[in-house]
Length: 165
Image (cartoon, rainbow, N blue to C red; front, side, top):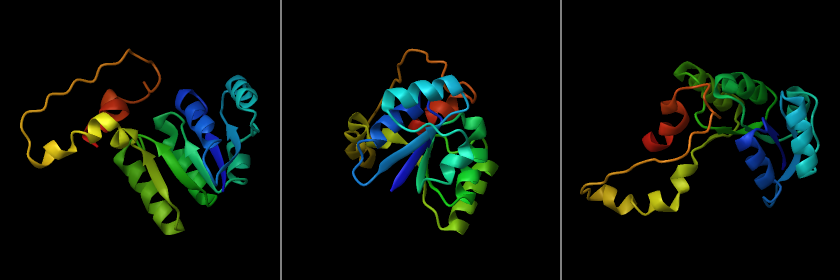
């Protein structure tokens, strides 16, 4: 399977690096609007930098969307129109209407679209699952240093979406 990454900031870089190690997948290339970042990441990962989003989408079977949330729908709908399966960084879209448009388009095209809800696989959270059947009292705190990445949407969409999920 030929795969690509759209957006190679912090999370996109991570996805591209990991995709190189996935059996059955070949990282065909990356794209980012920031030409300097694109060149740097392409050199570091030794992967082809594409000159345009559409050029990458014409080449791959599947792609990761790791662009700012406010443009998830635009990029996802272009990828779906190109027949590309997707992993979209969370949240899937900026609004419910945009999320519905992505899901409807993917269903109509017979494509797989998944959202990167990685906390579902967090060992600490998985260990809490038995307590959900017979709850007692669970208190949780999310502590992390501030990272300005992802400030294009509210914290509820960017981070608390994991807790809600």
